[in-house]
Image 1 (cartoon, rainbow, N blue to C red):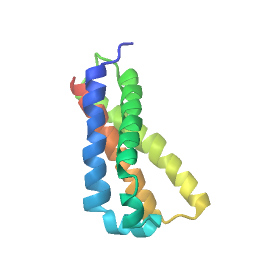
Image 2 (cartoon, rainbow, N blue to C red):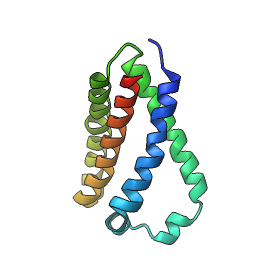
Image 3 (cartoon, one colour):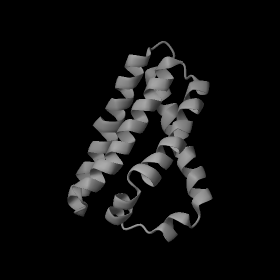
Amino acid sequence: MEINFVAAFVASLTGLVLGYLWYSVFFAKIWEKLAGVTVAQQNKGVAKRIIGSYLITLVMSLNLAAFIGSDSDAMFGLFAGFAAGFGWVALAFGQNYMFEHKPFKLFLINGGYNTVLLSIIGLIIGLF
């Protein structure tokens, strides 16, 4: 199976944009409250976390690119990304959150982010 490294690299940039919008614009206040994270905590060491987050997203993109392959289309990529984001990541979060007594709204925010992120990554990989 071939991995389209260019597609994975381009797709991984989605994490930076979506992560900023998701956690700083769309859901910032409620996420901070539910996760117990303060603005001061978010601002401390932000460059390291952005780089770390990007590297993790790059590895996820490469993993998804290996699964999708280079001869797939956009719809398969979107489906594969959704299946990974919701079917594995979000549901695993949900199981953990139940036992950790974390709020359902926090699950929706974090699980939703990963579902949307991996769906977009899969779509981009499928388009290449």
